[in-house]
Length: 244
Image (tube, rainbow, N blue to C red; front, side, top):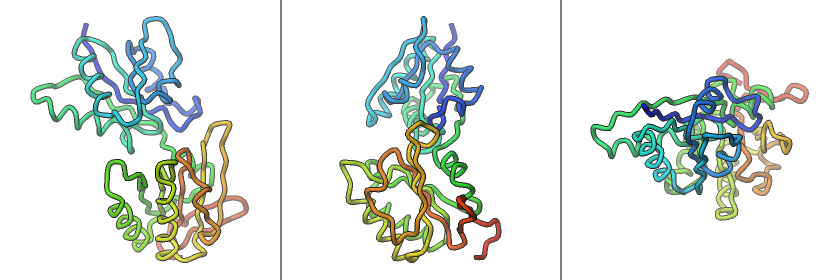
């Protein structure tokens, strides 16, 4: 039996937003590998083995998946959102780089990211140039996070901010808000989109002056508008033109 390995994005939460391509891979898989909450989104069935693990063992997950595929298994590594955005696709290739001559059948299956799902719920806050920044310092130093925030703000990008605040680092999002107020002013619109497309979804939009660290957690995507971002009714959008 010839094995293969797919890295699949499960989307932001709603099963309706899982692509048909990903559904087909899951239906053919013999093994599912991933962070436990994401693996739990895959329904069990006969002939399918689930391999849940902790969120800080990405390289171990990738190695396990490569080993099983080499033995003939049909393996899907699952990520939320898109597997290439702060997720497992890059960890897989990082592991593959340590195995010269190993050329497995790999497929990267895109998914709808949390930032795109959140933007759609809010209106069109990413309608012009934007960037995505992961505020976690687990894999990079915090001073680099601060530098990127400042430079993105100075370039007038709209921003999608991932992993804004956890119990282990509650103070860092407060610092991020300080930086954004310094660079963007108090009136800039900021949106908090929590658990988008799930029953726990909540959305709020307010000026930076009213933003508080406790408004975000690890299930929240924070979207900061650029200088032209505005409201129309209940919607938030960023004009397609470059000037306010």
